[in-house]
Image 1 (cartoon, rainbow, N blue to C red):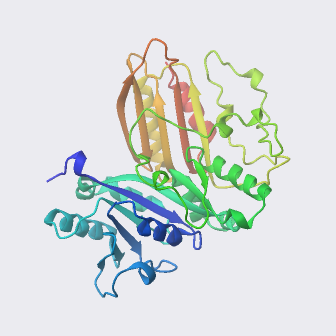
Image 2 (cartoon, rainbow, N blue to C red):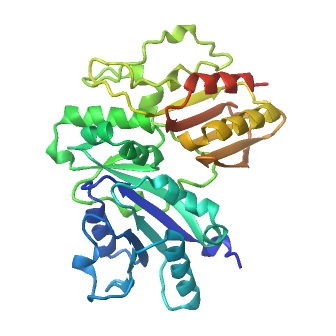
Image 3 (cartoon, rainbow, N blue to C red):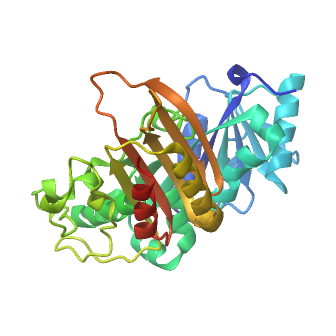
Length: 367
């Protein structure tokens, strides 16, 4: 029987390349006196197992209870089965926990883990995917992003990015890294954390997968030319005077900037990029549905995360949509008020997406 929304168990996916500090952060989460009972599922090919230091007893069992009421469970197989076991034990009253953290192996693409919560009906009825948090090692990130597409995917999937080991690099390296990350994923806030000292409020209940009418996009990404400090984010070289702002069809802000070699930022030709579409004209819902359906069919595997708040012709409410790969959901949100400036705002994050084709196609769907 499906659980009610109130009893659904929130899940946080913790990802990041080998050595980025996931285990340190987990130990902090598990050791802190926050009163939460957290079940941790970790892949057993983790760099070091969490249970070495904080588990109460040595145990051959798969699930071990800790002194502060948290639970640790090592996956020796299928994630769906592990989650099913946890849910069954919680229902039976043999385990008591409020939320789940899944630590992926450093080499894992978080996409399939996230998809589990949408594909499997039983999992979807018991668990609610809250957010993907990605840790990025400031010292080694540029090399890792250059060499491993999986690290780029970890960044592209994130709802929040934690930059670790920033004390080991100077400010200009950090600024370049932030610039690079923003262009891969402008919707994930970037926070610097050292020694796993992240605020619990920045880890849990982020509602990254909720359908809501909020769409935060890093403002530096949208207005790079407004900065004039030392590490100015130079804009992309377009003359914004030629945009038709009345109709809002200028999507220049959304064009990828990472291919330009700015004075202050190294050139990185990342496969994972993001772009934004904005317009003040309403969409024709039938045209948009057909177009997005086609895009998902062809490019769904390459689309990591996408989200939008939409202004639809003849609809008096905002329409919100978001998706992971081919799985897209949409819903009606709050009513447009007379004082609101109605507009469309969409962000797409993916692997080598045909940006111009998608922006032209969306423009053609405007009423």
